[in-house]
Length: 477
Image (cartoon, rainbow, N blue to C red; front, side):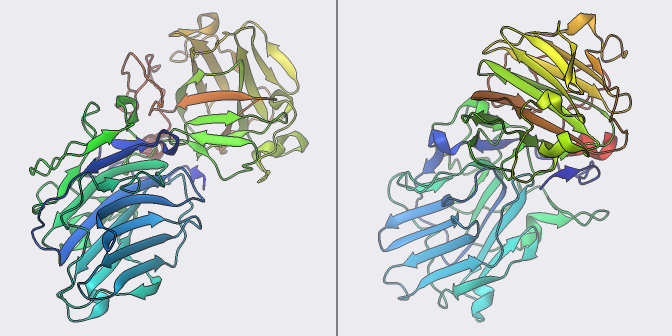
């Protein structure tokens, strides 16, 4: 999915500041040991999730008591959700629920909520799943027996209650989680966790800090980058962190969704990681990675870290014509050289060159060279087609995006204002790039926001320019 202009809410009422980014390749997981539950017959588990990795089993919560008593909820390799609770000798049956829907949107946040109360006389009232505020339908369902004790809140084996992987260390999540909540002993309504926006109808979070969490309950808000497993419920039910770092705290949340790469277009030879902010390509035929937000208006800013010998960054507007096929081809094929596209303006940068190309020819050859490990800067104005490039806090040719002076390039042809603008990163041969659209996947030494207080950048954001996120898109894009 691609996020177009207006597909967002600027004023969400309750704002979520942080999420935790889980990179499956790092084997990142949170673990704790459950004690005696308040009441194993009643609970709610809730989380906002933004997927990055598809097509693999990924456990977002798991509680293990023993091999006969365990519970789990996970995305299966077919991208549906399976929920399972084995209650040993309790009532003699396993609880199973499999979603009818598949969840393949890597550009959006979704709210998952499991509400259980086995004291209810009607079986379907004992076990309910809500997705984005609506009761979800499932198949292959076996409901829990009346008054069954469930294992979600049961006393676990040591460090065997886990988030973002199985409790024994497999099937790691690739994606983001925020507002992770377990309520033990009661079964509050889904409307205690969210509400529908009165203007847009979009489901959005509300403040959950006032809930009664119960003995094993917790509330993870990921506000402390040095302690991402910190429980804010008041219970002190903190999680131990494994393979998580301060850089895994993200500003990409369910109330302000930031741009990432989309892994849905032409996956051959491509590797996405770090919440789809790091892109690697190893084959010898160039393929582009596309950004998930396509603004139509506004002034925008992002940074990137060059992790290889060369990176090509292209913006593409008014995607028509024979050389624009990388902007529309679902196979993900780029033109042989991105700078040859008649619809793109491309900055080619490495330790040995820095040049801007458009319409198949080099328009500038004296631009910044962003070498391996260095951070580049990029600003563009969709009203004028002007682009600025630079590094180290300095703009090329004494440029000044805030005043419009000395751009690195000006879109001379095939540029149409009020038209979706695409981003593509690619190069012939192998390369690696990490991009900071406002939620950096790499460590930075500063903490600069845009003028509206959004994003987290190494260098100062030019006045009047903004990070690529849905709050800004709602106002400027």
